[in-house]
Image 1 (spheres, rainbow, N blue to C red):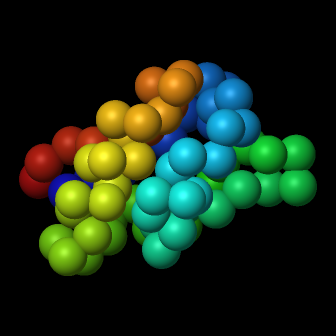
Image 2 (cartoon, rainbow, N blue to C red):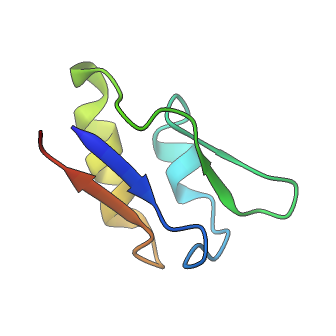
Amino acid sequence: MRITLDQDRCCGAGTCVLTAPEVFDQRDDGIAVLLDADPPAGLATSVRDAAARCPAAAIRVEAE
């Protein structure tokens, strides 16, 4: 799986960090940061859930 995060769309809600903290973090201003663009398969469910919960639709999950 390949993850992309559009920081320009991010609204700083933090749901991605709460849902998949191994893959996402937040800067001091609240904007999300992608920690791992190619996470292990074991995190697929939480990453897809984080993308689905993102109110700004800033996270894209692509299958490889």
